[in-house]
Image 1 (tube, rainbow, N blue to C red):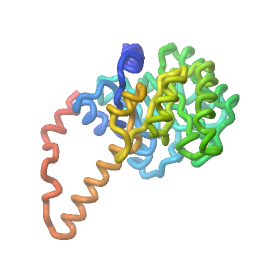
Image 2 (cartoon, rainbow, N blue to C red):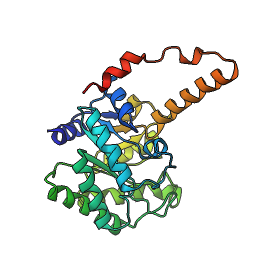
Image 3 (cartoon, rainbow, N blue to C red):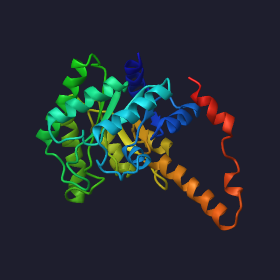
Length: 270
């Protein structure tokens, strides 16, 4: 069962998740050797002509999820942003929808809006409990609920109090049924080491260019490593570079080294 496999991957080793944003990117990532697929809400939003930051509708996100699940044989965990509504009932509806689409994990953030504020601990705990209960009601109690806190990403509170705030939230989120804690924006290895040592949940970090490597993050105790919109940014950068060369000098050198047509096309003969 994919949900049990994903739980095993999430607890028995360091899980590296290059984030996908559509069926094609998921298939390419799977072919590169990934053991599971995670989505990026930003990448999904861009592919649909929207900006990131909870501008997708639940229905749009679920449809992309369904296509990704259908494109790969791997477990899929979905970035459901803030749950597509502030209430616990909104989160429950979202969880039921992604499970029906075939997902075995969700990433639920505690931001009430981009840049903050965050839901208070009691509110977010209730939203996490709703996710847990909805999964059980949908006959998938193994759903992996990754609780994201944006304390560091949006620089909430005084700098010297942020780690304590994350730890307090992690304790509460664990009691509410979360399976992991995701702290984007935190890449300081000393603080990550402290967090990993004191957290009751496995820690997920978001790697980025110029930051610590996968090896360094793993040595700090991080158990899950994702890259957010990083791969989507790289893909769109490659497209812009090639287009600029073609439209400018008329050259085609930016296309050198590309996956060939048959290599890509065979990924979709399912």
